[in-house]
Picture 1 (cartoon, rainbow, N blue to C red):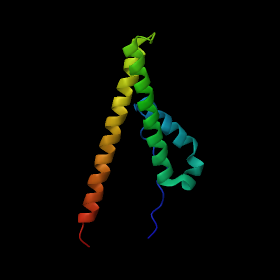
Picture 2 (picture 1 turned 45 degrees about the vertical axis):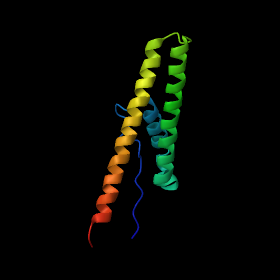
Picture 3 (picture 1 turned 120 degrees about the vertical axis):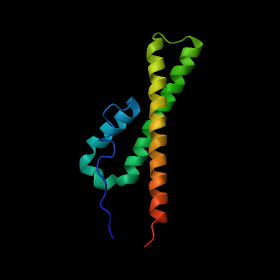
Picture 4 (picture 1 turned 180 degrees about the vertical axis):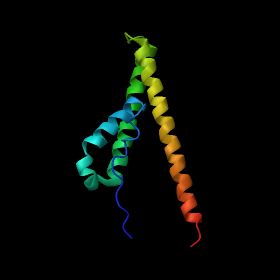
Length: 109
């Protein structure tokens, strides 16, 4: 049984999503013609690397805020909050995937 690939993983995440996930959605939407080539694994890798970039930018923004090297503290705080929301969203997605997987394994044939 062949399962068709899911195209545009980030398309639904772009509405109201934090900056890192929006960037992943744009890169996923730009590669819509190559969605079959990258597949779910490629989209997942892109989303995780976008999350990592968001976390790294939040880390550098918080360090700059703590040392007083930031000119706009509001943007640093927004960057940290965006990273927090992105991590919470990734955690919730992970939890839903784990629940779905457990449900599939518990299904009796």
